[in-house]
Image: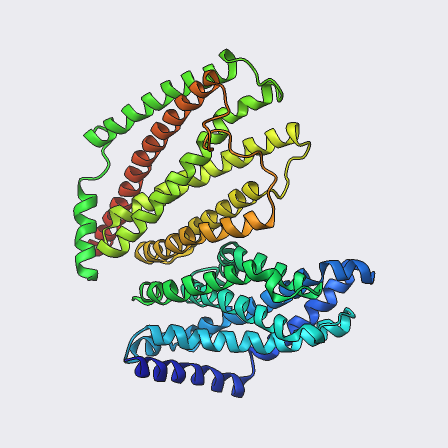
Length: 227
Length: 249
């Protein structure tokens, strides 16, 4: 049962990764967009290093989330544009495997983008991120999983709507306020030199959010895909 | 499944929404009661009871502010329950209750934000501040405005009902998480003066109009809900008649 679910999930993820490796339309766009966002922030806020240091955690997460949003929107729209939605539904086995497969792909693409944004961010804004890399990676992962879990569910839903490009961020941002607050404040504390122990309440909140929606979203996904 | 739902829809709408039906008369009864009770409560609150010792007359806005947000939470809880029932039973009546209740909840949350903002301007000196409860109310408002937008962009009513139900359930589960996050983030709001250990800190004479307004808004909520559900029935009925005429022609 579990082995079958894992195998089908893996097949789904592998399909998305293969498509991505061949077409390169998602991650490339995400990376370029992320670099642009970091540039634009600089123009919007000026080169004052002290000021930038204060708002850096927020900027970093805005870059992560805007970039992630770009990738999430594509995950089901691509299926729709290629008229693959029906085939997706005909896949034997539980629908959960489609959800987890898509989710794994989305997390993977977003983490890839983050792995490039983070060093670029450190260089452009003169921040010493290297000393805190493991803690930052943990927070980034927890935040990304939470954001992508609800994001994958809502992307599947909005792919069928009129005005789908607009609706995904409109629905996702308000629902992921706990993730945004938790990630930004944990990152802020870490960059200020505090250990993970100081931010354990935010980490617990992120873990709680991830767990709740990792359980609820696959169940809700069945109702979204129903045709 | 789809066949069964379609039948339910027809049965439901075929006797729908005459203004002289018993349901409609009951709704109007609730409406009249709501108007009467709210008028009494507001008269007592705005005119009869003495002004607050510290805050003065502006405190009177509380008589509308507090009952509004409580009724809004009730409305969103009803959306949550009706959405679960819809996904379970696939009866469009539950969906009609969900969407109607969500609209009223958004209205009441809007009233809460507006009255709170006016009160804040005169007490704190600013229209808006990122205090925990203000922020939470604003998040709630955006989630349910999103819910209504999502429904309006769906291509057919059954998809709107399914997507709406899923979003309503997710949104409601999100409230406690938001609450925790925002609480840790900041707290500036005047602490609750009625639901607190050691009994209310508000004089009994001030509690009377508050209680009456609670009842008045609850009645108004029921009135709006009944009328809005009736409107939804008429909508479904109209859509069905159009479909039938289209088939014959």
